[in-house]
Amino acid sequence: EMSPEARRFQERVDADIRIEPREWMPEAYRKTLIRQISQHAHSEIVGMLPEGNWITRAPNLERKAILLAKVQDEAGHGLYLYSAAETLGVSREELTRQLVTGEAKYSSIFNYPTLTWADIGVIGWLVDGAAIMNQIPLQRCSYGPYARAMIRVCKEESFHQRQGYASLMVLAKGSAEQKEMLQDALNRWWWPSLMMFGPPDAESVHSAQSARWKIKLFSNDELRQRFVDQTVPQAEYLGITLPDPDLRWNEERGHYDYGKIDWAEFQAVVAGNGPCNRQRMQSVNSAFYDGAWVREAAAAHATKTAERETQ
Ligand code: FAQ
Image 1 (tube, helix red, strand yellow):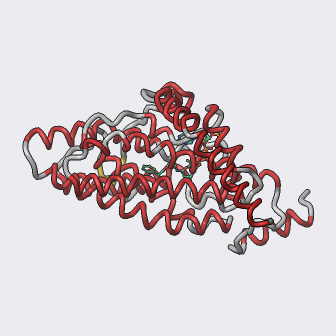
Image 2 (cartoon, rainbow, N blue to C red):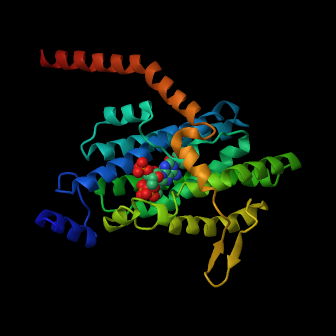
Image 3 (cartoon, rainbow, N blue to C red):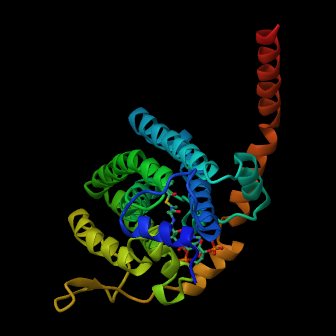
């Protein structure tokens, strides 16, 4: 039996009226949003690491400037998202603590290594492509601050995806070695990109409730399918082969069929045993502890300034 508040809340959600921070909301709705928004924020922060690996090795000044801008955008996305989570009553300090101690999840995709320059272009094309596919609907999700944060984030991700694809067009028209490097990067990133959308619908524990609350407007498998359908012609245009022998157009469904995803690999990565999980946690920790003096200095400065102002 729903309480009158709970019924009123669900009616507002059903009517596509945005829920704002000070309104009554079910505790489970608040918890789900904190979980999803904070995981999303942590993904942006950890997502800077694989790309950061190539800032000092970008092939020219222009590529380096673009990559720096992209990584800075990701830091910005992390900050908007932490702020959106704070409107639900959790502190930035607490969310940071969860990330640093390894209690918090972040996207599986950022536990794979960036071995060559082509990986940077492929991340822009596929990883940002998958991120956009997931985030465009989030612009219309039921929670106001999250939905609004997604508008700017999606615009920036769209630029990221285009720069990734544009840099791959250069490799695709380049030397035999460049084409080989591109194909190799695609072979390594394709399947992990499909895993970004989360477990299959039948195994997605949160999907049904999140759909009722309009936090999720499309299911994991629906978005994954859309991503495959969008990406196949883009791969064809580049003249590269997606590493899936079962990939083919299904006339009846009006979609591409694709092969089996290795869910055991996904589970292993999410459980902390992917190729770079330990390295990522180490980087997050050294950034946090090496930066402690900056936070202390900033806090001391703020205290002194406040004291001076009250004198
Ligand atoms: N990795 O029941 P569901 C980016 C977990 S884009 C790790 O289906 P839900 C931009 C899930 O948390 C990447 N864990 O869960 C960028 C849950 O565990 P829990 C970030 C995963 O929430 C680009 C359990 O499995 N984007 O950062 C993953 O309904 C380039 C059961 O799953 C977002 O976070 C995974 N891939 O649906 C940055 C988007 N998938 O919490 C740098 C917002 C699932 O019970 C460079 N998030 N899990 O312990 C969402 O839309 C949803 O949270 C889903 C998962 C769709 C990811």
